[in-house]
Structure formats: structure tokens, C-alpha cells
Length: 460
Image 1: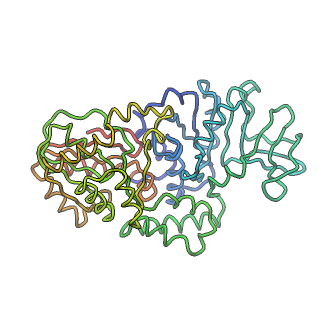
Image 2: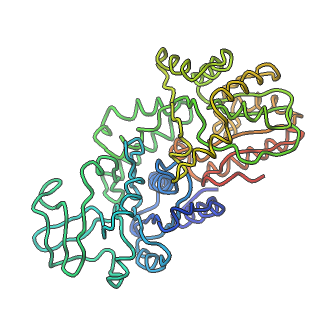
Image 3: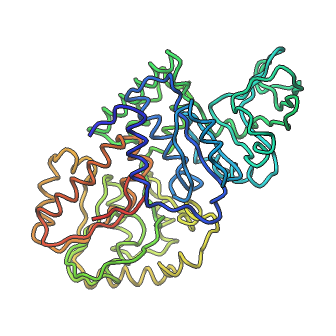
């Protein structure tokens, strides 16, 4: 499968997200991703499309679910907006928009706040002495107020207006604009602008640069990890490109000390082999709650993560001990106490999260029990690369699952932002199908747990 146009991308993405439901608290909001009609489809444009879509699909860091999302061509936008009768506010982003989700307040959170503010519109205002308009890259709009104005054309140009005398830069980017017969339009503030960038995909010099960047990422992922990519892409001509800087900001490898996903409903069938990533304590929970007796394999594509998990398990570390370990090694360990809730749930349902996992001592006791009752193995493998290319670890993987009843946890590997940066949407979808075929061919029975590229549960 190869995606050859924005239409094909849109169709595949909608299929991948068909079963994802919006959160009740967010049902009044809609996110629209716009593809300029004149933009020529290419590998770099496809990757920019993918990153913009993933980041606006759910969660305050783009890693969750719960957003209502629409994809369209620029020429379709006005009709799409007219059809959004059930929504009160919209975020409109053009292909090539990238958000810095490491910012203290993410752009998604700021949009949630905008929807509570009562303001009419926020955008990138362009204004000279004779005309003013809003740039296409990013707009936040109060749809109720827009409809009360008669649903004016979103890209209208105003000849009569008042504007701020102050600018963000030069003399054509005012802090606010008041067109005749329109409410006040605010410009994104400096702190908001620093947390995002637009690739300007239609400009020839930017098209060339973005093609080089994504070609480099594509080449690196074949034999090195994203930590290496982040180190090597930046030094030369790309170091001034804000799109590249923000894109690569979250691409470095790290160990997650706590899980970012709920356990959910588990199958009743019997298993004698569990495959699960190193992060957090989900593997310990699986050992305890599944109908399981046998071997658990913790896998990861980073040897450093394997070594950290092994130390935590063998020493049955407390959280304080893990923090001390973090201070003594160079490899980063992430501590995100309520990470799942912050990234996925707008209401931070901490009670549900604690109910699923239990407190720290409960998790340590499960880890201790796992050590006493299970065979524990650690397996260095890049799952995406191995299944996709059937390279060397493929045979090792086959030997481990052969003839076994396998519970295979892929967690969020296929929907992870690093995976989306390194692989195209069609590659990720194809790799899931190859993994299913691999398990069907070599196991006695199997069950896959995790999310597909569109963040919906993987179906078997």
C-alpha cells in the first residue's frame, strides 16, 4: 500500500480512527486540518500531513484521543464549517503546522482555554495600510459568534478596519484587529507562537529543506534511532528552521517509569508467554490478572531501557530508588505521575487510574510475585523495523513465540508520535497486518493488545 494523494491519506486515517469516540467534555469542539489545493503531494508533504493530523487528533500533547477531527481541502473548508452546526468552537490548522507539546502549556490546552474565554477569533493577523486578513496556518474560531454574523467567508479580506499600532515583528503583524462589522480578532501571543511552527510547504526553498529533513529521517530510521537523528539533523542548514527544531524536540529516546495507558478488559484464555514493552508496570499487572503461567518477555528497541527495567525488577525498586537511579545515569527516566490522565482525559479521572493499577506498594508486590513465579526474559528488538523488514531479530522473535499461547502487548507503539515521525501511515498499518500474520503462522494461539496508528484498539 502506498498513499499517493491527500484524499487517500484522509480515507486511510478515517478508517484508522473510525471507532475512536470523543470525550463528552470535548464534544462541542472540532479540529479541522486543511490541505491547500495547490500543494503538490510528496513524501515530505505526506509526513507533514501525518504529524499535523496526529497532533490534533486527541489529548493535550497529541498522544491521546477524544477530539472530533475533520480533514479537508482548502476549497472545501467553508462548506465544512457550515456543516459544523453541533460545535461551538473550531481549531483550523493547515498542513505543515507543528506544535511543541513539551511546552509548559500545550497549544491544545490553550485552545481549550480559548473555547471558555468568550473571544471571537484568534489567529496570525496580516495587515498593511490597505487591507487585512488572517493567515491560513492556524485559526481558533468561536463558531456560535461566527454563525450569528451570517457565517462570513473564513478567508475574507478587510479594507476597513482598526488595528493595533504594536506588532509582533516588522509592521504587518498587529497584536489585534477590529474589522468593520466584525468582533475583535486577537493575534496569538509571543508565548503561543514559540510553541509552534509552520513549515510553509508551498514555498520552494522550504519544500527543498523539508524534503532533505524527512529524507534524512527516513534514512536514519533504517539503521539508527531517533536520538541519533536528533543529534545529526540539527547542525547544518536546518538549525534555523523552527519546524525541524520543534519536530525533533520529542524524538529522543527515554524510559517511562510509569504507564500512560489504562489496562482495560483482558481476555480469559490461557497464556504461557507474555510479550510486553519495558515501560511502567503493565507487564506485572498482566502476569497477575491474566490466566497465565510461564514466561514474560520485556522488550524494547533501546538497550538502555532494557537495562533500566532489569535493574528495577531485580531490585524491586521503590519510586524513590528509581529517582536515585535517574540521577546516577545519563539516560533519561520520565516521571509523569498522572501521565495517562493528563494526556488523555480532560477531567483527570485519577480514581479510575488508581483503581486499574493500584498504589506503588501494590505494584511492587506484583513485581515481587512476578519474579517468584515467572521466567523473566529481556529482548532487544525494534518491533516496527523487525516485522516490517524481517531482518535479523525476526528469526529470534519467531523462535520465542513458536507453538506458544501468546499475549502480545504492543502498547501505543503504532500510534506513538515517534513512530509516526519515522514511518508513513500506510507503513504502520501494513506492519500491524504483518505482525498479525506472523503470530497466526507461528503461535498456537495469540491475542494482541494495543492501539493502531489512529489510536483505536487493534482488532484481531
